[in-house]
Image 1 (spheres, rainbow, N blue to C red):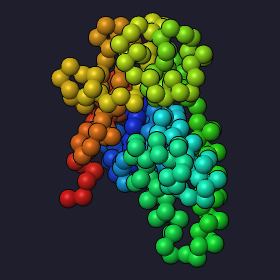
Image 2 (cartoon, rainbow, N blue to C red):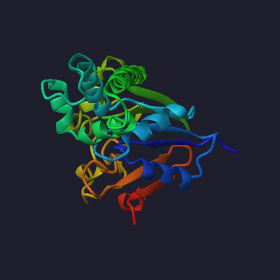
Image 3 (cartoon, rainbow, N blue to C red):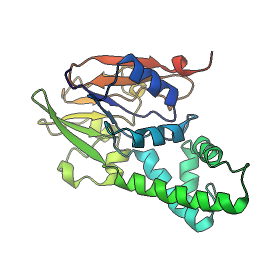
Length: 253
């Protein structure tokens, strides 16, 4: 069976949509899936995705801006002994970007209301250190050669005026229009998330966007962070096939 390579981005806690996608594409041990960051926040099941990704040898992940915000907040959580201390500037930024559901899911996972406080405290400290180590282990971009193309998989994009390797973590995780509206290295094909496709497509659809001017950028963020809508876009780099799971498909009937 031919090895297939898939790319998705910006799951934002929608674990059910991920499960539906893997079932629909028939994902198997011979395939590989790349997630371009932002598995956390806004949706209900960030922690489920977090552990699922770590358990799968053929799922690879890039850090997004939400992982970076979470890591910074977790670092201060060790200091303040609280996952959501308003004294923490990093937490306040993370909170503005949908952290509360992630914090709630962490507390539920750690069984905060079911165990003695001392035990919860120890588990929380261990969990925080584990999360920090995981996020620190993630790359900011991945390069792939496939079908005579050199792909750069990145969360947000690159500064088109400097070499790829000179882009720092913040640029790769946060940049928007300056990347996708300008010409970048024509020898690369960039696949990115971060900016929902509805903000790039002329028709405001959530469908995958292909750069009409420079022909070497592909945006795949289906807008699951936008609200109770959007879709999970999956691009197969091996075949070019696109699979879409609508937001509504993952909601309780």
